Image (cartoon, rainbow, N blue to C red; front, side):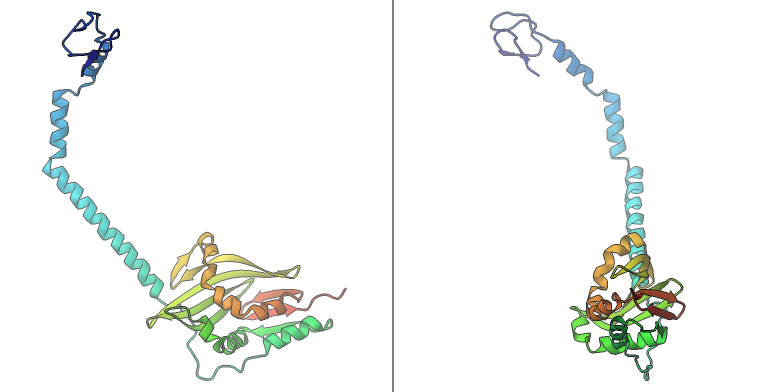
Length: 247
């Protein structure tokens, strides 16, 4: 470290007390503080020994190896859960003849004295299968081949499962909703869902709407007819739709 003269700004050797040019006394306090900060030789040797300690290096190597194995196992377990299909009803060769739910909804929205509509879970699924079969080309996305949509009706909520296939492997996404008709809108409250058999928290499931956007678009006409009515009630294996109250 050079000592700079405060008078003439000449750089002097660190061992000098007076400036080589002008003879002014040099400030050696900076040099003294720098020497004080120098690492103790014993501490330096201990630090270097720790860096090259073979036992510590081996423990560190094993730690990273175990971490990689655990991370790989977790990712593999998640992938297996995603590809495992939930317990869905088997496909039937002779499905229930689908009710004309779309026509019923349109007629009920235009008839002020219409009676409440009630459908079984089997009728709803038969209608969805019949309606979406003709729109299957639009529902196929890239390598995802659309298979079917199934609804599981429970008390106060329903589970909607969309089954697709990816290179022949099943991929099922399920969302659970509470449904309510209010002020001409269909309000859906997310209750979480599944990708395969892997559960998804409601906070994350809110961003999974893209997985159901194509199906929602294909059923948009039915939604527009439904929101013209008065209310919707979900019960185990049954859904009831009430007409709008007369004013």
